Amino acid sequence: MKHRIDRREFLQASALVLAGAALPSLTSCATAARPARPSASGRVNLGVIGFGTIAHDTIMNFLGDPRVQVVAVADPISDLPNYGYSGEYHGGRMVGKQRVEQFYAEETPKRTFSGCKPYEDFRTMLDREDLDAVYIATPDHWHCAAAVIAANKGKHIYGQKPLALTIAEGRRIADTVKSTGVTWQTGSQQRSSVYFRTACEYVRNGRLGRVRRITVGLPGGRSDWSRLAARNKPEQPPRELNYDLWLGPAPEREYVPALLQLNWRHNWDFSGGMITDWGAHHLDIVQWALNQDGGGPVRIENVVADLPDQSQIYNTPTHYSFDAVYADGTVVSVSDKNENGILFEGDSGKSLFVSREKLVFTPVDLRRDKIRPEEIHLYESRVHEVNFIDCIFNRKPTIAPPEASHRAITISHLANIAIRLGRTKLQWDPATEKVIDDDRANAMLSRPMRRAYAV
Image 1 (tube, one colour):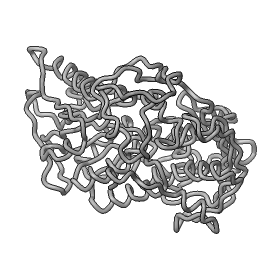
Image 2: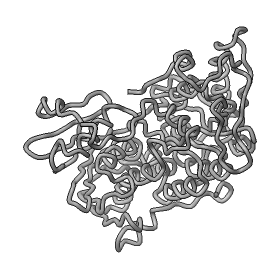
Image 3: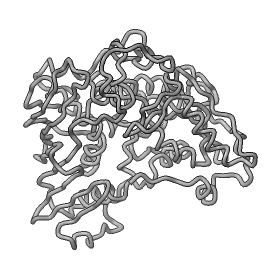
């Protein structure tokens, strides 16, 4: 469902582009540590933090937008293989630099371009006064620190999902973005899908009657995306990798190839497994449908999971199920045994199933009951990255603001806390963001950052 834009099509359609503007001529909108906005004829100078698997795909919608100039790529890796969902890509700052410059070269008469600077440390990149915005595409354990530093320097931020490694870090991101006034977009791109928006509008406008139950299917098991799982013993880090910087706020540990290049998703030090990886998508849509962007469930219960030995390299759950219960009694049942997607069930046998591939109405003629002009119409965005740039210009909220993303991923974090503690139930207060009467669970709402990288 990922929608890409073509730069030439955009140039023809956009009223913001000056006729005959030369690509290498840059207009920056950055000033000091306060968020700046470009003029209608200006251009957003964008820096990429982390050029790995996800950046390979999403960078195209920034490159294809004539209002954007990608001027820098930061990554502690210069160039290594085994990125992508089958280990098919190279990743790192030099790979990103080459990708950016090759794209821009095709737009110049001489088919050459040089103007994307590589950085090993993104903090050095953020000191650039001409940098307006950043795209954070690091592993989860770097999300909070990178976001806080960037926001405090007045940089607008597109931050990949899940929002943060912990509930406390998510709250910190949301609060920092609010206090600094920067524009933020979370990379939960399903909000920019017509399927998911339509599903949420049908729920919000009562087309199913009262929603009795919601069933969510997330992936389970474990994937060896990098094809490096067999190299699970400590090795000497390759010269292309600044391993200490890659670890950053995470606990210090020896370099093991099996943990890098996307497989880090299966280790608690860096991620929350498939529950946070896909929960950031589907549970975000559930919250949107229930009008809960500022709230959430009051209880996590019926928690069951297959949890590997915690001394293993890959120690996040392989199979799991849990229910999230809201104050009005709505139950959201989540499991990797369910079909990937979201099933909303209402009154009189009415239901709606939505995934990235389909939108299924039961009964079939339910789809004919269109949303009328005077009814609830949700925020419409067609291309997630374009919406981010739009909002830098117009100062409006994005379709995926940090508060909504924080509240959505909190559900996944709570499930993981319950799993790790062997709990079958947690009582949650969404107003105070505390687990009720459970000190051990509350202690897991945050994690310390390694001293050298603490923010």
